[in-house]
View 1 (cartoon, helix red, strand yellow):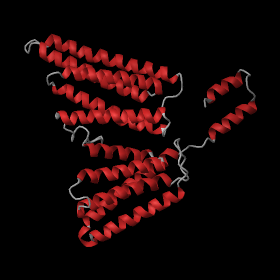
View 2 (spheres, rainbow, N blue to C red):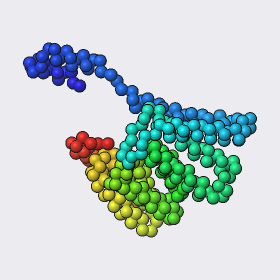
View 3 (cartoon, helix red, strand yellow):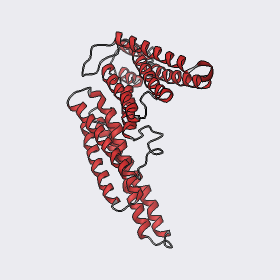
View 4 (tube, rainbow, N blue to C red):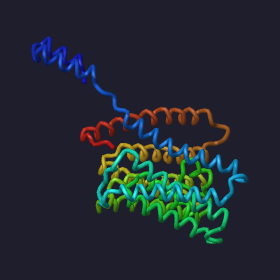
Length: 332
């Protein structure tokens, strides 16, 4: 609320002194919401609790005993699921409001303990034997069921990460480049197939209204994985690598259409940044291929100018797109 504007209205005689006092009083005593800060702290608390228990158990594994640890995890998991099932609202394909403040965090804790229990049993007692695919598939399927049953975006993210692990693709931010073998053609096609599947699931969620608020999470993982996989193939410079640039460009066109349709500036920014990176990489590859090694000074100056000018143009373009989307006032 702009108090100066109200004061100018008062001086111009457009509002009364009493109205100005009411506005000033309301602005002075405005309450500050700490809703999201508290939610962040609660999520952080769940993560720290599970991490701390893991470290405590690891350091005292000899004195505590595996059976006691497994029993404690199973009891905690069962107690959390009992609470959430008792408090769970009726299922609906639309967004369901949580019954209380702690509900979402208890669901997150229950699923984290479930995955921990499955991993512990497989590690210690080889519950699934050498069927490692099954050991990944069952917890992943359970997480998808929990995500839709309890309407939880955090569990959906865990399930998608589990799907990636089952397929053999790391989807966590720290591992997506470090632990993925993009130089393996089989792995590359699996990564792109998974990316397309996630984007399709997002579209189906949105168009069929099957948990439409899940669409963003599916598309977020799918778009990042698609761009990273196609770009990784570009920079390997194997025969036919320019075809991957065309595939990346086709994906960029789709993401642009998706951004305008869903009024998402976030997806628009992703499309712009990945496209700029791909075009710049192609220019660098052509420059490295055709510019003679001993004649770098002139072309190098042009290359610096290219990055300076195009970076400015990219920023201006993003600002323009932001204004265009903001006119609808529906930027997610």
